[in-house]
Amino acid sequence: MKWTIEDFVYGATDGAVTTFAVVAGVVGASLSPSIVIILGFANLFADGFAMAAGNYLSTRSKLEYEERERKRQYKEIQDFPERKISEIRNIYSEKGFKEELLEKVTNVIIANRKVWTDILLREKTGITDKKNENPVFKAVTTFVAFNLVGLIPLLPFVFALVIDNTSGLSSQTIFAYSSIFTALSFFSIGIISGKVVDKPPLRSGFITLIIGGIAALVSYIVGTLLSIYI
Image (cartoon, rainbow, N blue to C red; front, top):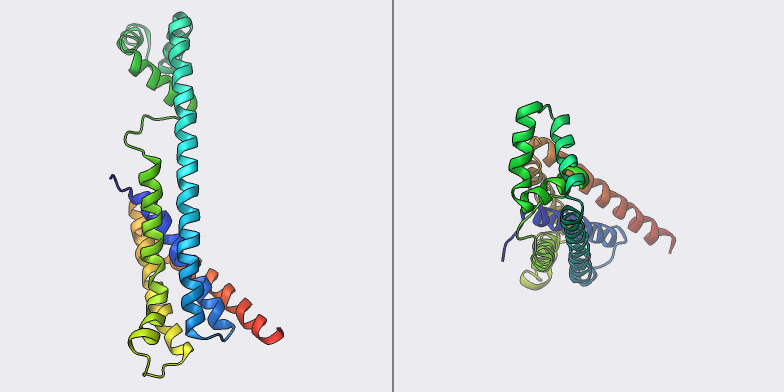
């Protein structure tokens, strides 16, 4: 199986944000740690599966569209070769190739029908020939990342309820630990994401931390207000 860092970051970010938002909302509503665990794990598996399914369907649809376009270009090359040669010539003319060099480049490209098709796809539709982009692998990567990182906000509650049930820690204290762990997760994910998209890692880390913090704060406020008025 080919793991993709893009899908891992995508799943991990959403897992951390949504699970911690659930935790913050439940704690804000002053509910027990057991409710946090129940709702948190329900969110992990339900939302994780939904994200994985969405990634699978979107990737499959994209690949089907790209394959359709590839077949169409290939058929047009067969049926209207002069027109497609002219398109290649125009593409490279706009890139600055002229006269004899332009003709040489054009002849090299049209000598290989796959290369010819790939260039037309890339230049006219933006489609690139990505190898090993498997919808199943991308969905599994998203699901695993969502659950692995989404589990982090729940770990202090699991520890307090199952392993250290006699400690008598308050929900607010446990929530503080959960906040620290989740903040570190947000920051780490942001750093990884920054490296993937070639952006400053620390800046990406802080941006992800801020976005996750806002989502958690909104959930906490909503939970607090509901506990007061309901």
